[in-house]
Image (cartoon, rainbow, N blue to C red; front, side):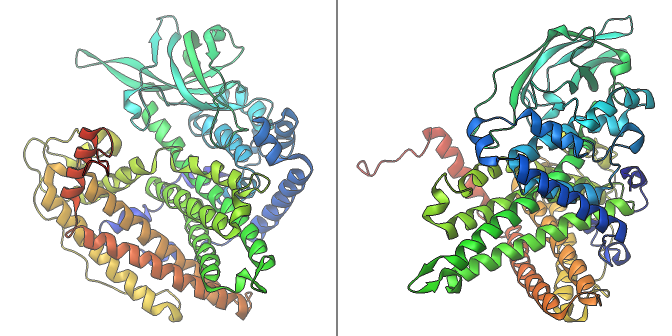
Length: 594
């Protein structure tokens, strides 16, 4: 069940192929299902998590005290939850991506702060060690990290560097004696002061063509090791939500580390960081599934028990609409997340688009569902004696974590466009457009020319053949939308040319359409598998069929809105009004003056 097997790139990104108007049905049909072994392990582990949480995790108390007790962390380590993806030889559980996501989902549904601490520890904190570490490095550090004896932390963000990772200032200077001296600071670091192991991203100098250039390198800084005396921390941040998790600034004042602490290759740290964040975004998406299920359970119980006008409010149409929308949204995200993990376990090596989609769609779906659940609870939802307001505070950060949703939309659009750009004719100063777009975030503002020529002939619209017969209408809609999307990608490249990099209005719509296509495909695949199964009773089949059709309808509506917006929009007016707001220093009007 190890995640190591998924490192083989046996087939390309599913979402990436959307940009060509293509879909390999054999890749996504049938929907990736849990094996009997996976089901058995998932049930055992989630049962253990729930029992431990019932006995040991008081989410309200931890939120109030803004602290996760040490015994909780110790208990999580004893359960194996601190080393879910670590190879068994180093003391871990060696779970594949699907099982990892399912276990993480369970914890996130119990408490956001605990899930944040665990995610910062293993989803990103020591993930570079799993991905890039040598056998010697793994043997040295992984056993204590997997057991929870040591916590890990991911140190990338700086005061002047958020989504723009290339602008970090923390510097690692080669001392010429096999060591490096690190100087700088990192901001908003989860597990900042309590961690012992830090994956630190620094600028390093490199000689290229007679010039010194700076690149990013990832170093392991370990508290207590010789040379770490300059490691220090700021005060614990007083946060709106996930208050029990620890967030601090981390300072490096001439911290000395041996070259043996480099994770991955010297100067290749940006790629290391992006690979780490790809997996981190996926676990964040699965965590959102857990949070959404928890809030729907609370809202359903309230709606069934709360009576107005001698009737449970669950019988009123506007409440029914909310409960239905919440359930359908959960079904959509759950399908999207577990299609992604299943594809990764099958061998999809490039999943950067899919993980970004899971993070963006997941975090925004969670926020919508939490808001709806609180509305159903009405006044109770606003009171601190109930969990709704804490869950809402905990949920908001997910739209910012691990790349804001805005920058991930830019990333999704540019990374997807990179593929079709390879078919463009060489033109102007740039002879290889795809190389310019190889790092989409870095490409913002960098591209100096872009070809204005159509790429390969569009594929003729072709209906999905493997969707269930009862979903034929939805399958045909999907095929038409996929073709229309690819044409719009082509038209966008022609229309904007070199300016596509700096124009976020069409980028946002392209990203939104990519997200909706992927969600709709996941819905069709999963629902088809359920409807074809002889192990699922008819009542359950009817339930998922209805949710699929409703969720697909909503997703299609959003897709069409974005598609139309590519040619008919108010982008210019939006830009002009925004500039006026900035000039006014805010709203700039008062009713008494006009």
